[in-house]
Every structure is written in structure tokens, then in C-alpha cells.
Image 1: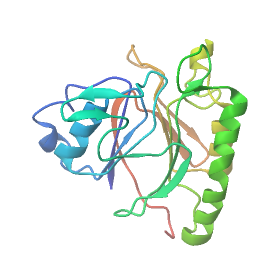
Image 2: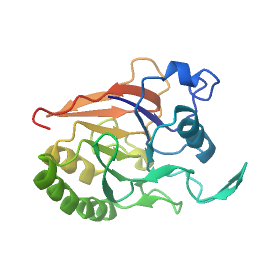
Image 3: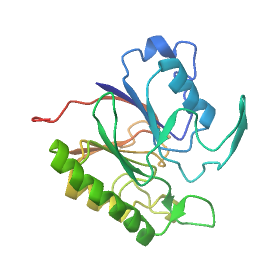
Image 4: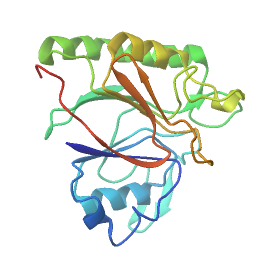
Length: 214
């Protein structure tokens, strides 16, 4: 299957009348945060696929737009602090929103608070292992893991609990945003054990191959 992951900045290749032709083979979409609800709704409605999301640190609690007021994208599925199985594909997903706290803004957490949120996912991972033979296929966050794709300033520090999660449960992908890419050649993909950690700033289209024995 093919997955479209988006984050942080709207792409003219997606918000386009040509989206259905360009991404006709995409089966599922994921947002790693800081994108408007109407942009995510455009993806859902034009591609007619499920979309899972977490919020970024610049997310608005409420958006006003065509059709009324909403607190989340219509048709989108919030992954924050959840372990879910996509009904159509059987894909196992989990997510945590936000970034490390650097001011009094929304969707910001201390390292300790991030640990608590990750620990809430662990029972679901263990249940997945019993039911499906694997813990989680894709872990979705806004912030990056500690020491991977992160930056030295406090706003863009990685999350220590995410690094532990990847090392312990080895999802096929850890998808994140938050770290903006301004220069060609900026590292956006790192392999850690069996996990591909991918910064999906803008958008990335990626294949998902089912683990052996699934």
C-alpha cells in the first residue's frame, strides 16, 4: 500500500485540481501537524481515503471556515495518545501530538509529560502483539525523537520518550514534522534498527510493505 504523509506547510502539488491524478495510488493519509483543517479535509474529500492526524504546536484549537466551525478536520481521525487499527488496511497506528515546551503556547509538553503520554500507548502495543503479532506499524508525532533530526534550540529539541519507543517497539515507520527543511540535502530520513524515521515536512509519499508473518 502507499501512504501520503503531510506536515507543516501546504504543498501546491496537493492543494491542486490535479491531486486525484497525482496521488491516485495512495491508500491512506497521515498528518504530522501544523496544517489547517481545510487542507486536510481537501485531502480526505478529493482522494476519498482515511486520514489520521496529530496536532502540531502551532495548531489552532478552533477553525472557522466554509461549512461552519470545527475543532478537528471533518472526517479525520485523531491519533493523539491512541493505538488504533485501520479498518480497511489493518495498519496499526499510534500517535502523540505537540513538541517540547518552550513558552506558554498550546500543545507543548515537558520531557516528563511526553514520557507519560508514551507510556499510555504501551498497553495497546502489547495487546497488538498478542492479537496481530506486532506492536505497531507506524508511530506518528509532530516532534522528532531525541538526537534524530532535531535541533539545539529548545523549541526543536527531540523527545526522549520517542527514541525509547522506537528502540523498544520497532515500528516500520516513525513519521514526524516540526523540523522545517529549507536547504537541499537536509537529512530527513534515518534508519534506527528496523524503523525508518522520516521527517515529512511538506509531504512524502511512501510505500508500506507488510512485515513477514503479518
